[in-house]
Image (tube, rainbow, N blue to C red; front, side, top):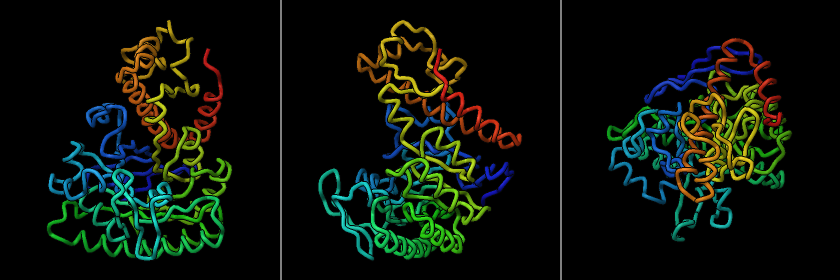
Length: 377
């Protein structure tokens, strides 16, 4: 159940009650594609840095080690030793990202595994069955994420099919949650709005799926090549047509600035690989923007990545030491950068929630964006 606690302009301060605990929103979900955060980060680390939700990938876990294996081991929570909420995406994004390895039909999508080339079929029912085996807290509906440069005719046909797939997902999840041997019989289902950069298609689709009374609603197919301005334009058009009393999730977004702007438009769930991916390359986030710790100017810098930060890296280690680790290709350097970045994102969301609670979100957003544009001394 989603509880809307407060609004500050369009910004929402909410609380999603789940079988695995309460999610305070706005929230950033830490991405662990194959049931692990890249960068040697454990679930104990995630607890320490204030992670509320971990996100894993249906397609990748189906391919390896196999959802049946995870089911036999008690589900994803037991498998990865994590007792808080988990969201699993549906495999739909791989319809987009593995375009050279798949064929889309009404019944579903035929893939070739990116690992060994074996043939895989995934439709709405199969995606729900896999996610039920994983026993995640929140399952995403199976959809197609069309290219932002596809023709209007293709986008419309794709969205219509995604709507039909969503109805099949809902029916199959209701069936699976009714079975006695289902691990998580309270699994939630989020639908996904698509339509590329066509406002009218997006709005019509949002209105259609809003009538299905799902547990939450995502906006997909953004941050896949369009400009930030186009993304904000679509959010301005679409979010008002999604239910206010349900969580709104902007998939795969994004930068801290993207998140601040999207919260201001009524979005309260986010995920992105940026903090872990950038961290593995020595790029770390601070209130004054990103730093590249490979730069020579940090060779003798005894300061932490960010003064006052309470992440495991900043509490103990200097920029100079972390730079040395990165240059020496020691995994510890990568790990410390990832931990810092995830802490930064989780802490940013905490600050966002506090600002909405205090009715000061517009001021907080403006001050935070201004600080990001400043250069560090």
